[in-house]
Length: 390
Image 1 (cartoon, rainbow, N blue to C red):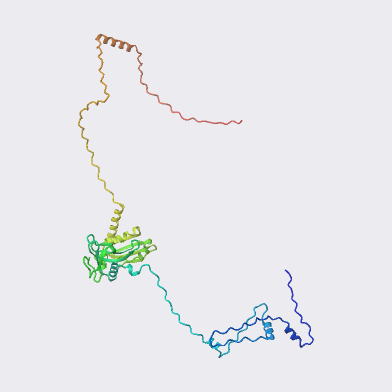
Image 2 (cartoon, one colour):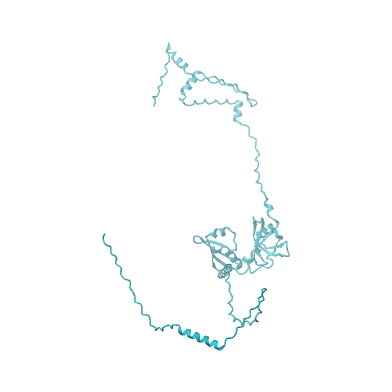
């Protein structure tokens, strides 16, 4: 590294008298010339006189301030002197002008594509009020010839996003079964006073009119079942399908379901929607019902009829011989030629000649029957292989 440079202190020139020396030292240091103060702009506040220019700083005060300032650092600014009390400027600073109140603008509500009131049709409003009040309703269809009026117990009001329409689900007293009805096909939904017609019983006093059907009207059926893991969360989030519906946690991955119903068909349909994710514990007739439906789903075995015994074939009647087929190029049949008959002498000569020829032929010698001798059994002999040294 390069050697550091040492700075030598500056030596003041000799002065004639010792009294003049400090004056010369004070006159030597250079001071930065401060820029000339700009002319003060007239005050914008009415009735306030313009401020006077600051007084010039003496050389001695500047030298003393420079000696106190740290080396290499930024020189601190001199604090401004407060305005004297009683002046208009001090009063204006002490009491600022009151701010004018600003009116708060309320935020604009979000623009909805469809108003909430427009979604509820008159039929949907009537069904919603009936569900809230626990009443049954009378459904009048547009096509009265195909769908006659009926008393209906609404349980749920549903808006389907695929069909873009309202549906009501509940108990149809005309068919004594659960049904869905689309509200667009209804001409009117009229509330029913009291229990209405075709109400199943017996039922407890105070029972809502829209819960008489397969839920509280008739003989109670106590159900106990075990749900597996994949259905527990779905059942907990869904509305209660039956009265006194309870879901209790068992071991990990299982939950026990208990409720009361009055219609075995509705209970079996609810249980079968889970497939193999549910185990029915009681009642026994619910288990039998599910087994019967499972056999029907899997296909019943067809009972083939036993084959009939084979019948003996009856003899075919004899058919008359067909006439010969006449071809186009029919040739006349050849008649056998007439040969003259041989006389008895010629026949005897011919037989004698054949007998003489047969006697001349050598006759085979007669062989006597000799049984075959037994074949000797031959055993495999031993083979020895020897290698001679070369």
